[in-house]
Image (tube, rainbow, N blue to C red; front, side, top):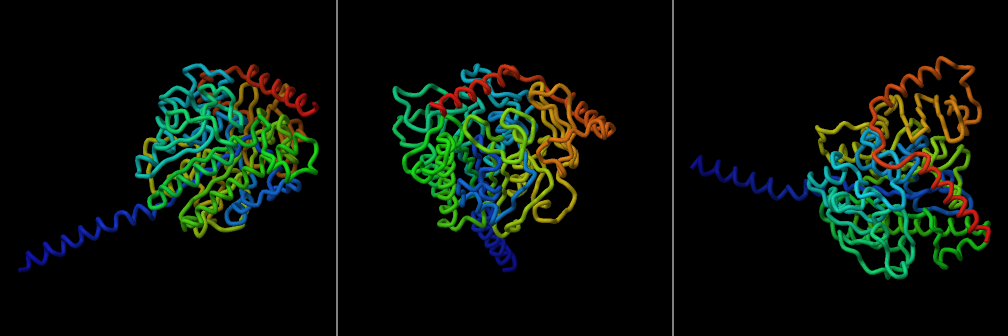
Length: 458
């Protein structure tokens, strides 16, 4: 009799564990990473923007944490994405530059690197991506080969927001999975919102990771009449178009946030928002008080809007002032999901204890940047930088001089030497770039800027 009771109790315990397993999985937080493209630092409401309302982006700051010293590890599109996906400085594996408009077949996030999508997929997450990839066009480099179970978007660095007459090339074609879809979508920003919300609907009953990467507000400057009508008084015309594109992206983000509310998933979703680099002159973006812009290691190229929301877990309406970087997304997401990565050699850190106020130490003692002949290192409030157009590194105290106007090298030579020593030690651990020439890459950017200015003046 006793054995029968024991067997019965044991069976009930097993059945109870099996029944609870889906609930345990469902309790894992969803992970949503939203990336804007070529956004100006000053072009969201919580950073003081007056001519472009961004209520939905601002809501992430209202209900979450705004990191006032948020950075990306590269001032260019593809390198930033490589760092984000791996949690490692992309220069460690040679992904220092964009590949150019016609990439070689060897261009892509190296297969030696494990993506966040792969780690979450292995942990039982549904993984999806919507938007711009820019981490390789050959099949082995594409999203569906790098841990994403679903993909809707394009592989290259830029494309038309409207259907491409006569069809798109391989880098610009819209794909679902590996297969091209017809060029009949009216406006990519709205399409990406539809695809993102559909992904959430499909996977509402299981933990998921969605990587939503808009091509807005990257060139070409394309906006619909609906959004242009909102900004009829904004001048010059290029700024008006930029405002319309920003507003469309903000609405798209609003649709995704509403879907989370409708599915009662908001409090179980960790959301990151970032721009891939600072704004460039060509799209009439504004980096506000920051010096420089995209493709430069001045603050205007690497300091970006950086918001983190997890309702009920992270504080609401808080600003966090210690330096953080997009490399932190990867280990933070894994920590939230309870996923170990024993093989990882992350440069990013888990931000949760810092954003919760559980520790007052800075997440990073030092942050580093290398972009061809440009460099930067931030250690505390001091930044040593060799930006575009200068011969020797310059030292700034960012706490007193956010605009990097007053070089302190002569006044504080010991600080400059210490930062140079730290940078040199880090630089010695990096690989040579696998593709791209820094001067050629920057030259292409300058040419694009000139063409954009000519177009805006027509």
